[in-house]
Length: 470
Image 1 (cartoon, rainbow, N blue to C red):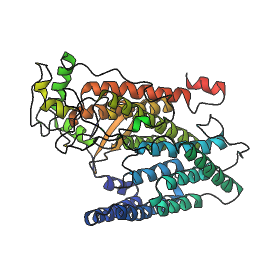
Image 2 (cartoon, rainbow, N blue to C red; image 1 turned 90 degrees about the vertical axis):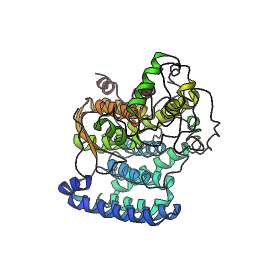
Image 3 (tube, rainbow, N blue to C red; image 1 turned 60 degrees about the horizontal axis):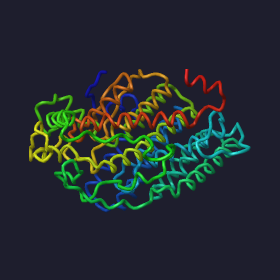
Image 4 (spheres, rainbow, N blue to C red; image 1 turned 45 degrees about the vertical axis):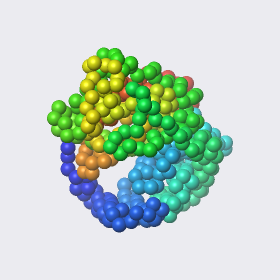
């Protein structure tokens, strides 16, 4: 693997897509200025919707002649929304939105393509000549408008732009009808899936090993305490692949991983190399967003069709959504303390190989507000990379990843498993996870992805199924 810090992303885009770079640069300058001056949550969301709508519309205008993949267009639109401060409901995990978006797109496109089994919605008497691109746009728009009504103006503009690129006629109208119908049926089926429940009040423990609110910010409550109660998209139940418990505090395994994160994950530490410290910070964002962008890059590099893209993004995001449900089940089963608590309280763990540091803080500052075991980055990266490798039928792939939290910084890789491994191990250098959190998370993510790949969106014909397993 080659991993590099490279130039500002806007400058790079400017050389290859100057109009696109100008649009993004202008839009985000305006957004930054607004964030600095406006602290109203609703006002921020509404104005961001307008500004980002203009950016997306302008981007579409610059790429009309380039035959843009509609599945990628709508995936990018959702990424814009979830990255807008205040847009995502605090008690609803954004991976649910990605799963709903891409399940609807897939079922709408597949109703026309008919090469694979539907995810949930099967329509009868659908014309094979209906526009798959129109079905994609209509399904995506319907899902996102229902999930994010404050962004309707932006989404309506995106829909009109998408449909304007499709010739008028019966094929287009049929595609629109199919997309909207599928989306409405899917949303209705998921309307009582438990995602609207209120988080379960959490009582922090005080015994060695118990999860406790973490310094320096000390969150009043952990996040998504209710999420294991959400109905999975594919799994039979949230605990289907639940990992065994973390190691005993008095064990050599525990002391080894304790001292590893204590040494390499401390803020402003000297044991980590500059690159390791960068890795810890680089991946310290919403990990599912990184993997959706990696999937976009793969789709464009392979020149996948609308139907192929719809299936890939559905498999990816259904796997990721269920992996989140599964790891929250495990996190709130074991309630294991985070490294910052463990290191500051090491004199209570009955292990002579661990030494307390009452002032220790992680490299990334704040620790995510939930229990440590298993690690979310590991689960999601394992699930996502497993899906991509299976779908593409190869691991080798030259690509770069942009950081969610370090503007203008990228890391470059030549295979998918290296990116997954780096994203996973980054949590040690970030100072927020023990290695056994990551080992258990990797196994859980692979189990979820393999279950999805083995049971969902399969080829309709036996000979096609046989080819998949060759």
